[in-house]
Length: 133
Image (tube, rainbow, N blue to C red; front, side):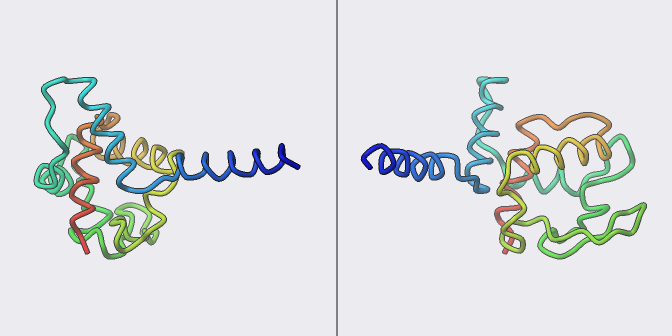
């Protein structure tokens, strides 16, 4: 019986440790950016907003599909497919699972930039998204 109780408590603890929240992702991107560039400061909502709305090498911006208001639904610029709100305040599921977050950052950064986003870029965009209500 003790073994089962111990396993149950371990399972509860590991679930809490690996809970994925937007703040968890932001902290992770900040740490990763600091490792890549020790002079890196904290993620910036202002840089994130500029990045989100700027046209990049592929002639798209994040706002091309997610709109200038990422707390609202968007539409894919090519396919017209509906895109749920990106801002965590409007869509709690957006930044809740690592595999899904990384999949979409990889795909969208490649579409917009023609490359993967850096940890600093991800952190800045997420810092911006967290300011939206």
